[in-house]
Image (cartoon, rainbow over all chains, first blue to last red; front, side, top):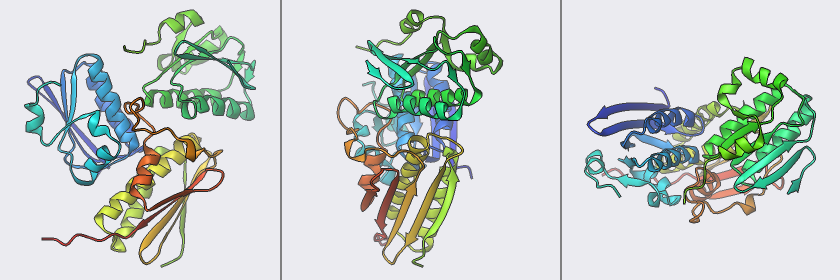
Length: 115
Length: 122
Length: 140
């Protein structure tokens, strides 16, 4: 199995990205490229499902922050969902749960109102 | 204005303008020092909008290009911008042949380059 | 069991995964708890990323040395680069309001949060992290 798997699916008005595995400095570029291709297209609503993410380091957090910032700049939304356990703790520890929008599930993210 | 041995570093608004003092950036020790000084700007002084001014540079080796590529990547990770200016035609030719003119944003002069940096959002 | 294991890797970020995954495997064999293994993987990946990117500045001619040792109740890992070291006492707080949205600067904070001990040598080019085995929660 590859350390990082990224799947992108476009539905009505929403782009779903499922990310599973590990995001360390080894894998950051792959995720960065995938997300940048979406923000370059000015995708309006990007939901990143991280329920199968096993490990994220500061490099991975940096990639998510970059993508979030890019989306906000063109008036889009970039939200995360499915975080749990140890991985969710990493976001809390770095206070990023205050910067990035986190939802429990894909459904909660889809039904969320723009901030 | 900070004076370093190999680089002249001047802030212009939010941009840090870096002028190479060396005519030749060829041998390994020089490349190492120039590289370290550039990375220190990002890693230790948290500068992420950099304009490299090549007006004094007449020779540049491929190892130096390698450093610039790594620097560009590092700056991009920080959501920053790296631009190049005042490159003489002989050196520009090297960028063109290696297709690095597509990777780097290269401008004729400093004013033109400075105008192209993103403004800080208010 | 108390012997030091050591390995060296070139300064290429892609090597990080191999190292942290193989250390994790050894910790699993020694019955470290899931939480402790997560913490070590995270901290080790941060330490390696710092060594490769900031210490050796991705110079492929420079290497990163990793040493680790498992004692009865804990693992000790040290990561050393060939760089000039850094001033680990004067890092800006990544959770400060003006830095919160910057993409980087969280590595050392995470290492300190997840490890029982994080120490540097005087020069600042070698970090040593220590983590206890932890208690595995009983399955319901």
